[in-house]
Length: 112
Length: 115
Image 1 (cartoon, rainbow over the protein chains, first blue to last red):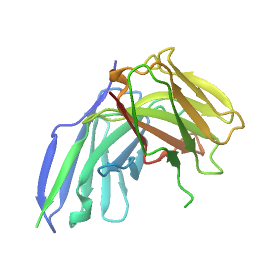
Image 2 (cartoon, rainbow over the protein chains, first blue to last red; image 1 turned 135 degrees about the vertical axis):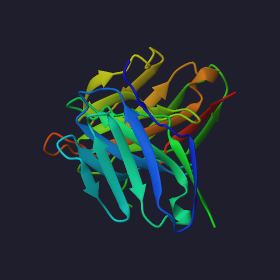
Image 3 (cartoon, helix red, strand yellow; image 1 turned 90 degrees about the vertical axis):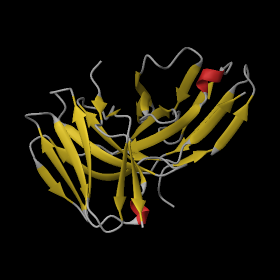
């Protein structure tokens, strides 16, 4: 079946630097995308979402970029902090109900 | 706390035993989802409810699994005759669709270990 995947399993960045986490999706019918952050022992926490009629959306310290031409999604975190250390998942939705399809995840490690 | 709550947080059981998990969604959310997550993987959809109606079940959900949401509020997920392969984190999420799009809010999950 079609799935969401990530380019890098682990990303290590220094505190204060910007982080970019990438995600490739394969279902061209996907019309809604979400980034989740998951800390150890906790459930996924909503970070930011974007609809397919947009190519960029900004939140607090985070920006999601969507390139539908190449089916690529990215999450940018500005001024990365130790509290940003977690596994990040992108997820896509194609249906009327939110049966999200998640990728494997990227672990973000923030070094001091 | 007005988030999604799940109980228990951890469950250790012996193979062949039955287990039941509970999820209390955010109170105004009419949709409730169950997902399963294994180590290093993203969550996988199991089933979802709109109010008390179970509208879809994944092929991952074998006959040993059953979920209910009798009054359209809390939900239970039961696994009968547990197997070691059932060991995973079971996540519940809820949402209230707006404009055709939904943000799922997840609970902290129930970590199941089958010995």
